[in-house]
Length: 227
Image (cartoon, rainbow, N blue to C red; front, side, top):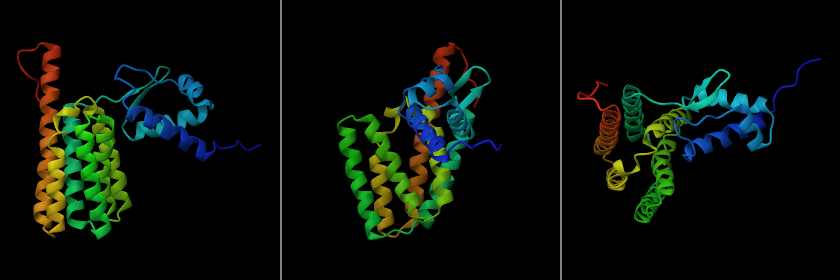
């Protein structure tokens, strides 16, 4: 008798539920996710849970320790720097190739307004979601599904280090975003790419500085380790 395969939709539902749980910031780096816990929470068997966890490990969001469970992946400063370099390359390509219509510009400007409202209300979760949405809108305008998927994965991995550092760049990001939209609206792709690169480099620099300072404070060292 041939073994039945796990329903794809059940595995996908488990994957999205666990991923949302992670990206909503409900775990810290020491929290453990077990198949038993997730199975009881989601009301499904362990098999689709296991498949979902394997997919999340492949995407770089968690690490699985045999017979122990899954933990949030902790990125080194070198890994953070490399992810930001990749993100910069991807988003620079977006600036050069996005096909921008009046509808896209309308959506981008609406996103800008929501960003400022959410920032003023100190709605961190809402702001971060809108920030990601803004960049995703630009990526989608390229019509390149593979690029969109790659950028989303990079963003998710970066979030593991940024989730506790909301204040590092939130106050300046809407201004950078507005400058990008204005440059694109003027069909000045060179300036748009330059602003986008500067925006990403600014966030990268602040985050790396925070990680170094934080590690230095925790370790009580006299010298800071190199990246």
